[in-house]
Length: 298
Image 1 (cartoon, rainbow, N blue to C red):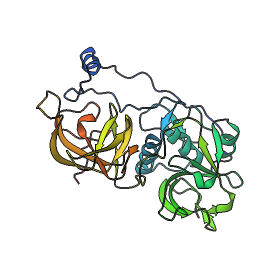
Image 2 (image 1 turned 180 degrees about the vertical axis):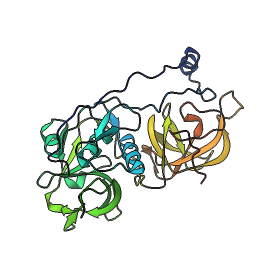
Image 3 (image 1 turned 90 degrees about the vertical axis):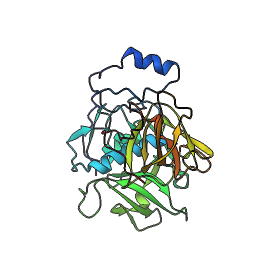
Image 4 (image 1 turned 90 degrees about the horizontal axis):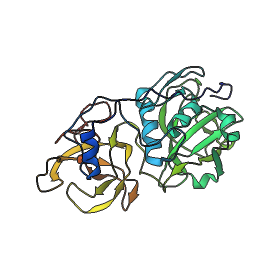
């Protein structure tokens, strides 16, 4: 619950190390700087308070889900890119996922001018369900096949009221949702969320976050038929698999790994493969997550 929590502006991080001029030059010619490494923390695709893709919203939510911070209405921690600190409660979780420039609570987000009310049936990945009567908010993830139940992220709420972030399934017609009457929730959409319906089923456990330096083509299999596109920036992936070298022709920068993920656009979008070549600041035939840990093998 976050209704009574005070509002604290997000705090920007000091500027990180800039890339070397040689890396910038490579990028200007459309070449991926995969063979060169740098030491700054993970970057982010969106600016604080700016436009953000649905896939990045879900990836940011997955970061706190995996980190499992303790619930508090007065504690603030960094987001995945160390760009801002957000309050560790239910609405703070949504504020962080949206990369807001402020930390409104469940009442404040409705009055902020940052969201539009939408029909519950129109919910898409990265939208919010807000219960101002009880002071709780959840982040919508993905409809289930019956289009009645859905997966969502929640922080706090439940029997204890202070549960860590979790990823679970419920329904708007259920008696209770995240510990409060489902009928109390209203659906909202962040005004600066980009794109269409977003990625597939949502990450939850079993995924890791990665950074891509450009839009990446998605394929139905490693080296197979192109089916869509994964947006540039922070994304989640399920695992990696060794496959055909990309790009073909033995260029200086290349990668044999392919990443299983859900695309932002295309048909189909679920469980497709993108070349690890598009990972930001990685070496040849290296496929690590944003923390420099090898992505699990499929």
